[in-house]
Length: 398
Image (cartoon, rainbow, N blue to C red; front, side, top):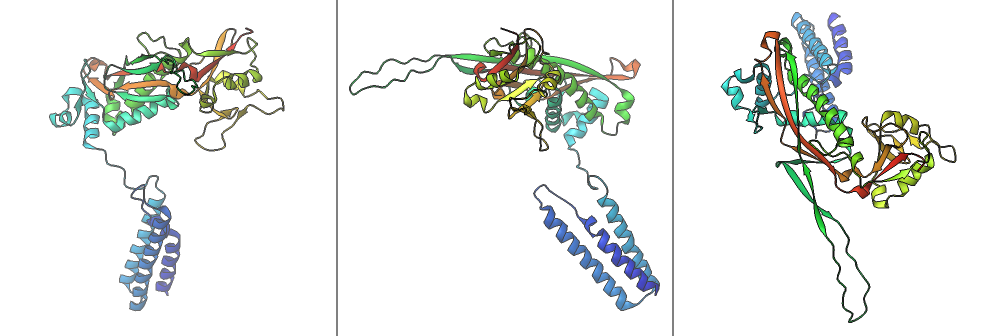
């Protein structure tokens, strides 16, 4: 009878644990098909095994076999509850070598250094693996929100030039045999230079040695926060001298007067938005800091409806007058004569990134303090390409 009870226990566990046998191997796999097939295969295997045990009758060997099935079920259930599954992604050789370089600097073995790409920056060092550079850029967006809406390009030269049309053609209606009038249009150039930004971070040698492979992540996040805050400020208010040109310092961007020095006027936000050509207005995004956004959230139209609307879908931004809002911490506060709000098609603000992320490790400078200094240069530029795609709100009476 004990054999029958064990069979019932295994059958019950089979129904509960079968889904735990699912394993996803790639992004293109259909989860529903995989789940269904895994359950069917698992239940068939367990059913066949139980049938054989019933035919043989209850023996000590059968009890041992039942115990194996129960252990297998428990193992599968444990794996199913484990976040991320049981097969972590294996890092590449370049990434392993880079982690060694972070810990030991140039004292890393020749095989490790050979796997890295030497930086062409004048201070030396090595380029971070491509996947780390990609992750670094993603981290940058958290501290440099302009990146999320601007047009971003990678360049291999110190600067890049874009044609700028300074006039338009003059098409005219003509009658038969009439001579066409001259129509001239001139083009200039806009140069976006990549400016150099330098920083360093000091990391405990104990942290590097005992991090279990997470040192790379810590370095990446520390650099992303520092670089992100600096470039984020420059993209908004940069002078263009030794740093990117910020869109708020561009003198060609028009503005709408709020009519009051401290209190936002809902009607003026509507005026600002519809003062722009439809082709730009319909692709526009609002930019303002958190304090201003708090004030905008309280604004209502003539029917008592809030201009601000929350996002009803994960990953989608909140909106003002139906257009998305990006919070930019470096935008000015509301005040007499200030420009606390900008609206526009930010694809007309060009950000250029030169080269991949470069790292130079110096384990000797602060060795007596148990620290390793990690230097990182970065070259990035920014500039408004078309001022007509933006418009600012000026909090003033005139």
